[in-house]
Length: 128
Length: 93
Image 1 (tube, rainbow over the protein chains, first blue to last red):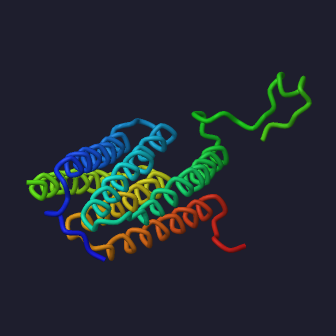
Image 2 (cartoon, rainbow over the protein chains, first blue to last red; image 1 turned 90 degrees about the vertical axis):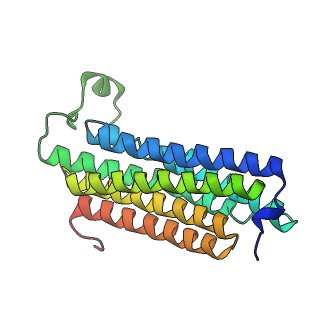
């Protein structure tokens, strides 16, 4: 299946270009945050810009151009968007927990220790 | 006319993504710890996937979409495995 870029109407081209630039720009902003933020627990938030709206914008642009260029509805790019949206929180939460475990086992003073506080004792709930 | 607009936008988007991949590579080299490198690898996978989507728009073929899907899956598996390795010291217990 192919789409010819010359067949795309002007309004669709402008809309898709806007989505493309938004998506790539947000991915770039996310990686700038990855380089510039000071600690790991702040840095882990930055690349999610690229995997949420970055991927969303690019997928949206791709769907618009393929639909307008081939003359029928093309939605298969949404698979990439759904997959990335589902998997990113899973991976980053696992990575964050692994980093927290490493920092705690080294007694790093920047992360909170596992000792229960007075509030938890009052609740009777163990901290997870 | 519309072809010129789309090609210009794709070119700009790909240039921005190349810069983003360079920043990820810098973080992966600089570290300072193993979890930073794994995080940078995950971001690099995401940028490579977006780069392939942009390439698919430029060539007008659906083939690159499948490559993007495979890269997304590989990135997920790689990051989960590396996170588990950092936590436990081994992958399969």
